[in-house]
Image (cartoon, rainbow, N blue to C red; front, side):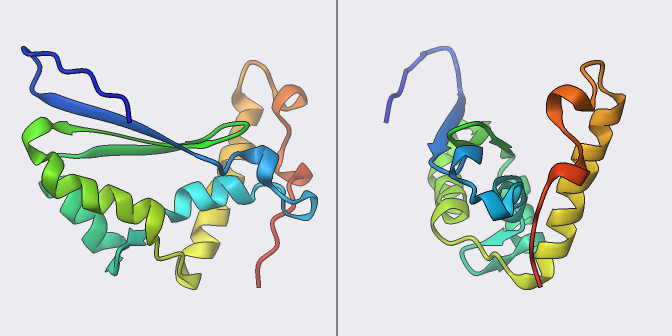
Length: 139
C-alpha cells in the first residue's frame, strides 16, 4: 500500500487494481469482466445491494469500478475520518461480493447497453466493437 499524507487535506482516495481485466476472460465468455465489475457493486459482505450501497452512502463514500486490459479498478473517495468504517465495506466488495443470480441478468443488460452506446461515440463501433461481438453465457 502506498500512502501520501497531505496535512491540509481531510479526504481519502484509494484505488485497488485487481487481476480481473479483459485479458483474463475466457474466449467463450468475452465481456464477463465487465459483468463482474457491475456485480461487485450489487451487494457484499452479507449485505444486499441496497443495504451495501446505503451503508457507503451514509459514510459519504463515492465508489467506481472500471475494467481495464489487465485489471479491474475499484476506486473510492471519502472524508478521511470515515475510512475506518468504510474500508471494511469496500474490502467486502473484493473479498465477499454477493454475486447472486438475481443480479446477473441486470448486470449483463447494463454491459450490453454500454456496448450499444458505443454506436454514438465518435470513434464508432469499428474501434471498440458492438454487443454482437460479445459472448456472455449465463443460465
